[in-house]
Amino acid sequence: MKVIQLLECAAKVRDFDTIVVTGNGGGVLEPDEVFSALEQSFLTTGHPRDLTVIHSLGIGDGAERGINRFAHKGMVRRVIGGHWSWSPRMQALARNNDIEAFALPSGVIALLMREVGARRPGLITGVGLGTCYDPRNGGGAANAAAQSAQALSEILVIGGQEYIRYLPIEPNVAIVRGTYCDEFGNISCAEEAGDLDANALALAASSSGGTVLAQVREQRQSKDNYSRLVQIPGVLVDFVILAPNQPQTHAGGYEASLAGLPGASAPDPDLFDGMSSPTGMRAIIARRAADEIRPRQSVNFGFGIPGGIAAVLAQSDQLKDIWVTLEQGVHNGQLIDGALFGAAINPCAIMRSTDQFDFYSGGGADIAFLGAGEVDKAGNVNVSKLGDDVVGPGGFVDISQGAKAIVFCSTFETAGLKTKVMEGNLVIDVPGRIKKFVDKVREVTFSGAEAAALGKSVLYVTERAVFRLAVDGLELIEIAPGIDLQTDVLDRMAFQPRVAKTLSIMPAHCFLDEA
Image (cartoon, rainbow, N blue to C red; front, side, top):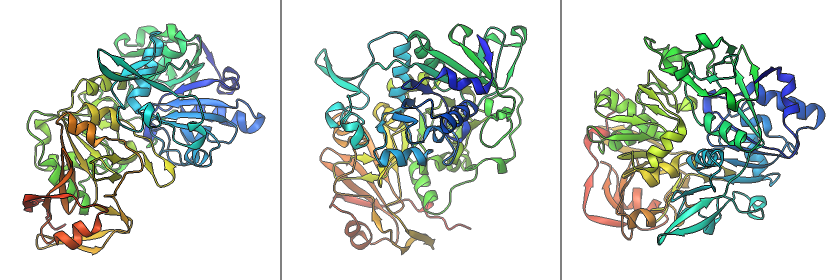
């Protein structure tokens, strides 16, 4: 291991290299100072260029940091990402076909790197079957440039069962991060809000004959380093970059509670988004969705509207009765919504995201609460392609295919929708301009047919209606009080669902006025 300066980083990355990077939205474990050094080198010299960038989770701030650093025409030629929303500039390059854009499930990318690190023949899994990540349905190619490129996966049949084999990709460079290192290059994430996939990326690059660059806040002597908290052993690390001003997250500074350190007090709630209870339509949906939870269940909450369910449970003192996990590796604690989704205050455990995705694939989640961008008559859900932009699935596919039960949480329509609650009834002041219940989703991120064939319990909860997945598609089972079935629900869908003979009214406790 050798300590190098930031200005030396660019020399370690060559034109046409494949680089894998760690990080999560909100700046968690984001080695942004190294990213910035590479960006400045490209803007000044034109190198490194034509890179392939691989990231499993969303990385950035929606403006300048994270994956945005690579979003310059000519700097990258291909991106394989799990979640793209934190980099609008990279989305623009994909939209204009200036890059080959691939979106794959986050767990697939992270676990593929682990398999590459072990020199195994790629990742063989059922995750993605029947979705747009199935090689028969596009294989994750998210724009025209990617559709004409070499495929990333193939179908295998083992013991009469179909699987997807995601082909191995050998990285030339891994860029990872920790809190500190010792003189031997051992990287500790002791004060970080997550471990993520840093170990898998370092292993993949090292076993492929590549280079591992590790950004850390400080260097310590090994005698002061807890060996049990080392996430990347020094044998995998080639170069360390000291970044003394490295923040734990984009919120700045270091909060001990986000790292789950013993005795840490809760931070100022004004520092983080999403620590308050949901309001309006989000509150209605969260309350109805929370009704599906039973004590002692293992529960996953997805990004967006589902993130408010934990606050609803906390209000009724039910959160302590369940076990909550997020794909970033967090177990329990006070979840944070918004930009720092994936972190938690005083979690009881922080695992590697690779271990967490194994947990999900093995059916570890009893029930998952996930968002929905579009839903069609077959029960298919799209969250990965909205408008003209690549969004990517994040951990959605890994979680939804592994969970024993799923509750999709979404407003009934979007773009201008305004509602209110009056005397226990839902009133629609302004309808949304865009339907979310469509005849056919733009992309199949969740396959209704696959779930129905497995007999999986699936609900679709909105502020005015609740549907369930039946063998032949969607069935409407509940409507909100004060809502007209025909004009407010059926006439505002692009298809006619089956209406249950026992159609009921959504529970009254979901429709509390804001006071």
